[in-house]
Image (tube, rainbow, N blue to C red; front, side, top):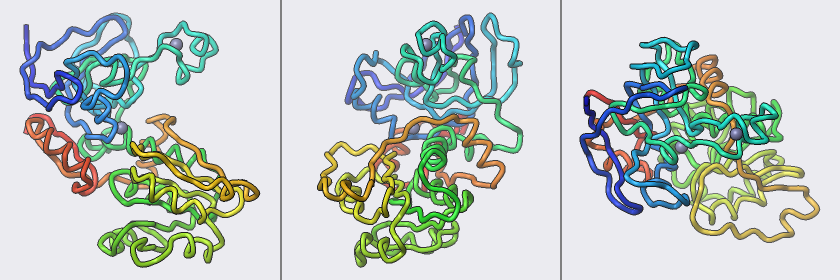
Length: 336
Ligand SMILES: [Zn+2]
Ligand SMILES: [Zn+2]
């Protein structure tokens, strides 16, 4: 049996462990992928901390994966060996639940989730279902492209499905792994784009990436500033900071939406009067197709800024991501 190097979590709350694992054979409808790069996402904390019910350990995290197909399972005729493919959070659908029978596979009631119900991409090889594979075009390099499969998909679809239309005022709260992509998407979608961040250190970057205005929340009141601009149609909350989100809701204009994509553990605390009368709303966004985000990124030249780590430094890559010390997304590169 051939073996591979992988980084796994053996128990909820346990450390990342570099181990030697058997390379699995792809079953019917599956492929074996030789992983080239895997992004490190805040969502990997679900595996690390065991906060999703029913995760079976040991489990290999990683749901921003790009690699080349090494082997086809039975029943696959669309893909060929050697083809580069991407895998995101969605790991498969059952094909027979009521949603699947309606053709709404994204709403499958019995889905597979990459790195939750199956092993993910913190490894030299992984098994994936063919129905969720995204063909990766040659011009998209694996390391820089990997974060598009979750961070990119999340922020792109949140903006695309929001109430904002061209010319509207959109505020991006936080300028990290999600925020630096959200800012570029917002600008390219034609929104008047404001970045809300703490301190001055990210102002230059924000302006370089096309922001029309930068608001330092430590020395200015973001609500006052947004109101002076007419009120935001959308505030995209990318930083997992419930207090900061709660404090900025008043900066929304009439009918404005706060769209939350960064999951914080603590509670949002929002006075009801800020929502009543003004028609403001707070929604979460987690859906969207990886193909749409990758397509728009290639169309508009949006490439994630990443720090690259070898597989054996997965713990460091994760730690830097969780403490927002990475510029701006950690990516594991295999074979380094
Ligand atoms: Zn289903
Ligand atoms: Zn993710």
